[in-house]
Length: 225
Image (cartoon, rainbow, N blue to C red):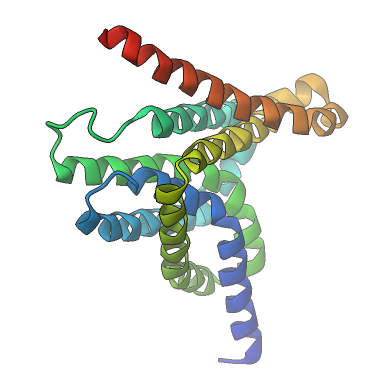
């Protein structure tokens, strides 16, 4: 293999690491309440699902990005996931088996990554160019790096629970950006307006997630009483 291949492979790995910060956050949030012995399994499976979906989207689904309402639906789904990650408390459902919790965490990662990968795949595909082998190999190599990032974030979440809210706000921020960039919205308000409202929309998305999650958590004790 020539030097061009190795340079391209390093580019794919590096780009994926940069783009996987949000994936690591989701994996850490989804797995934080798992039993200790299942956390590593959950993180590895979550990262594996994230990479698999990234490959599938890059090879097959990138053309769907311009479909009307796709980003709007994806953004709404991402908001729902963010709120669920904050409001689902450990111990709320003691009857749920550990295996169910594990699959729930992996499913959460899968849904969130399916939404977020819509934007990420284009950059990775551009770096990989026409080499599918390079694309797949680079993404596979990235798995342990994503797991390491999720593990570090999870340790921070244990010491600083406020970061759980920060992670949910990040997902709300991404959801706002995704919904604003839907083709329907772009046609309705124009590209210039999209750029002008980008930051306010992202802030609103983050604040909406935090506000709704706070109201849900505050209502639970009153309902129990």
